Image 1 (cartoon, helix red, strand yellow):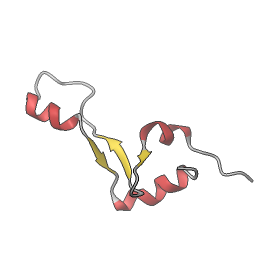
Image 2 (spheres, one colour):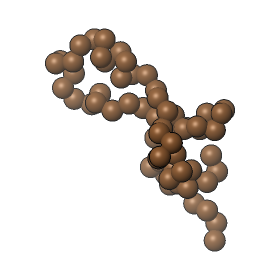
Image 3 (cartoon, one colour):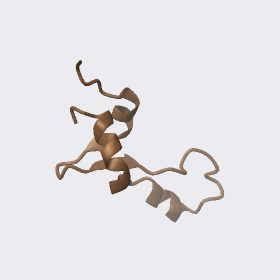
Image 4 (cartoon, one colour):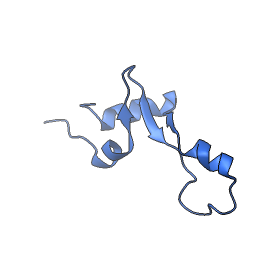
Length: 64
């Protein structure tokens, strides 16, 4: 059977050139008035997926 891409994971994660996955940070959906501008600026940046979760994402994205 063909390996299918998990479409929800494909919209959330991108593979970098070094083989790691990058993701968007959480806590930026609501309650923005109480957060400082410095905090919101840091949350806008991307970060890498942890090594513990990388294997499960690799299984969800076989063609990445």
